[in-house]
Structures are given as structure tokens and as C-alpha cells.
Amino acid sequence: MRPDREKQLLKELIDKMFEISGHSLRFEDVEGRTDNWFQEYTMTEEQNKEWREWGTNLINKKRRYGKKAAENEMAWLDLYCGLKISDYEENK
Image (cartoon, rainbow, N blue to C red; front, side, top):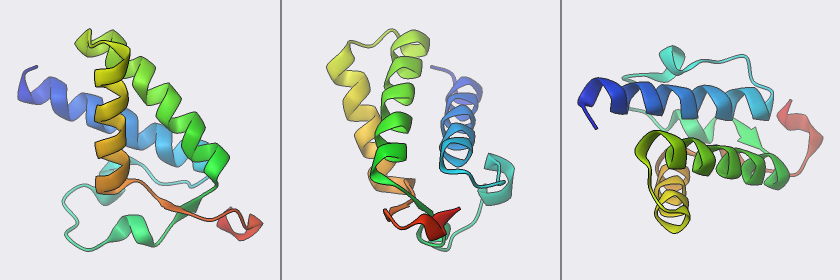
């Protein structure tokens, strides 16, 4: 994929992560930050699962990857910038 398409895909994935986790942030709010911003916010295990499934389907569609390759991409993204997991209700 071209760099602009890669950035657009990343934007969609990060925006959806914030939407699913109930945070009113957008990709633009964290773009370029060099601190561990993803540790400041949380999502539940169920929200993380929903986001990873949604992202896997999006990667499948946009990159035409197989399911396993798309799941691996989402696993790396979750490791790199996925929100901290907390099943306490205080994350909203």
C-alpha cells in the first residue's frame, strides 16, 4: 500500500479503537505524540476483542490479506498502540 493509504488505514483503526472504548479522542489527538499516550486510556477485554475483530475485517478488505495475516497485523497494532486493558467501569 502507498504511504497515504497506510496512514488512512491506521487512522481508521485508531479512531475505531477510541470509538469502541468510549473515549472522545481521534487519531489527530495522538498523532505525533512520542509519550506512551496509549497507557493513559483503557478499554475492556470485550472492547479490545471487538476492536481487533473489526480491524481484522478492515485489513482483510483494504489489503486483501488472508484472515491469519490480518489477525497478525491487528495483534502487532494492539501491542504497539492498543489501549491498556481494564475491566473496571472507570474507563469510560
